[in-house]
Length: 175
Image 1 (cartoon, helix red, strand yellow):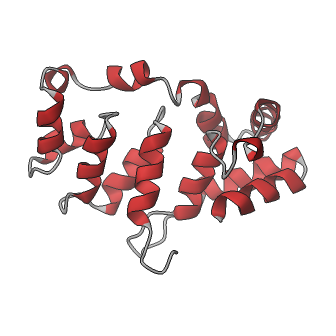
Image 2 (cartoon, rainbow, N blue to C red; image 1 turned 90 degrees about the vertical axis):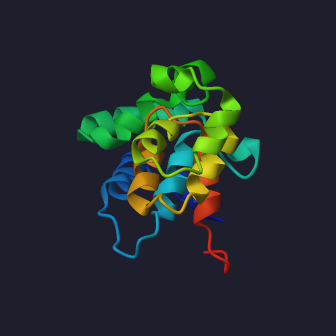
């Protein structure tokens, strides 16, 4: 639902208005209800090319024009998110982010450690591109909103990671 609304809104306004809207969403202050900003997460997915159907996704030309408009406005937050898009799905870039001491640990152990208590290790495991590691990490009761927001704001970030964050923040009533 959020995808469709964002896509329709961005497509219905001028590129300058779209840049202004994206900047407002990306820079608005966090609410204090201890829930991740779902609109921001959906916007990051839309900027990354996600959509309900592939033909609805934002075109490269639109994203290029949005970057140009953001540059003209001095909207660094928008430029930063659009600049990292080519690396978004590059698994090699995501794997290179892992600290050397973590890369030496077998994947099965990563998955187990993501359920653990060691805060330093949990921060390092948040960088792991493996979807099961991220799933266990998000379900870990030691992980708080601040950690999830920090993970969602990383650049580059895998689309699967953003989808898992979004799924983990859904409430029972669908909001």
